[in-house]
Length: 84
Image (cartoon, helix red, strand yellow):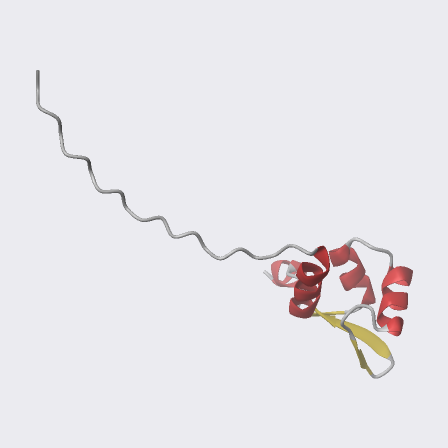
């Protein structure tokens, strides 16, 4: 059970965890954080990354607009024709 808990991705990640999550190198992520390009904060002298902020940042940078949910109205049945 302890192994299953440790494999879950945490809300707050360090450089290594966040770089794996984003699929980029740790050096690149460190540079992005230092330049303020990516949402991050320092805890002591270590960079930390909040998963929800990274997700929101990725959505914003991807340029994908979230569409409003489509509402489908139920069609009314047509009146039955006369039998021939």
